[in-house]
Structures are given as C-alpha cells and as structure tokens.
Length: 266
Image (cartoon, rainbow, N blue to C red; front, side, top):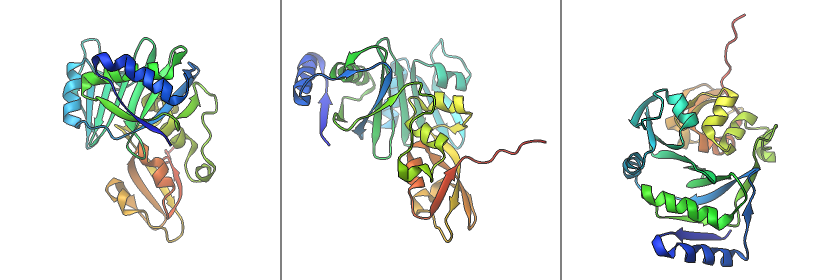
C-alpha cells in the first residue's frame, strides 16, 4: 500500500499536483458514474478547532450528545429542520463525540471526510471526468480553511463503487452471513445520511442501533461495552458507530448483526 502525505499551501499547489502525478506513474481520471473511497489516516485537528473553523467558513455545524442534537451554527438559508439540513446542506459538519463527518457539495465534485475502521476516509464523488490529483488538490485547498492542512492519502489502495447501483455493493464473503446487507450498505454508502433516509434507517448522529445475535456462549468484546443498551445470553442491543459495524460483525462471539425488529400493528 503506497501512501502520500499531501500538503497544499499557496504557490506549491501546482508543484504538489505535478509530483503526485509523476509518482503515480501517470494520470488517473475519475469517472462521474463512480465514487471513490481513500484511506487518509488520522488528521491532526481538534474537534473544537474544526467546529469553530467550519462555522466561520459557512458550514452548518450539528453536534450530537446523549441522543440529542444541537445546532452549533446554521447558515441563513439552512432550514431549522435537522433532517433537512443533513440531507440538503452543501457545507455540513456533524460532530458526535470524538467523531466527525464533513461534507461539501461543490461545482465539480462532492466530497466527505468521515470515520473509518482505522482513522478516517475521504469520499470523492466527481460530477464530470476529472484527474485524480486535480481532485485531491482541490479538496485539500478547501480543507485548509477549516484547519486541515494535509492527509496521508492511500493513492493505490482506494476503493471504487458504482453510483446509483440498484443492488448496491456486495459485502465481502466473510461478512455476507454476519452483517445485514442494509448495514453493510450504510457503511460504504456515498452519503450516510442520504442512504439512511432512503432505507428508512434511524441514524443517531454517526451511530445506529443494532441487535447482535450471539453464537452459543458468545461474549462481545469489551471495546463495545460503552455502546451497550441491553444484553442477554443470546442477544445484545447496542448503539454503535457506523464505522465500527464491520468490526463488530467480525468479532468473536458474534453470529449476526441486524437492525432491530419493528413491531407491526395488526
């Protein structure tokens, strides 16, 4: 896996892009029918610093805590309806504890930075054909305004997903029988909030309630104890970060991770 630490400051912009293309062995063109997922490690910026800078930059900033949401900053054009802001804001920052989800809808591409199983990931959704490093440079220039000055971008191991695919991405073989398809689809969706709305999933900030069906004698890892709502010998209910769904499903003691059953009135 080859990573590049990309930093963009003023006049070095063109040089960074040129060096990156040379290092990659040639230009790579992003396709507007596809969205791209890059691992970017951890970013050296505090949540409070990011929130203040995002508000100053005209972002809608929402903060979740104990199942409640506060609007730390709202633009004049943003609706007071939180769900509408989550779905339609062109510049959005959602803060949930020590996690954040930043989304920008631009003229040539949309992008998001969000939690991943290890660190963070960058999602790029081009609106037309665009060079990979032109896209990365464009994103990095904008992120400087919110205090993010560089990323360790994995330029070789990025994942691609077809946009608007009817069946959605297929889960890896080891997850197909352990994680509900809608939950896997949420984790790799182009936009978590849009996907949750389309599928009728109830996100709680950057978390979601799930039920774990345990294998006989199964014990859940202690790392998920803080997410626990209730537990018996056979099942457990948790509100787990979206980025940890795959890790939970792959844990020892877990048979299957699904959505809670919703009672139907006869």
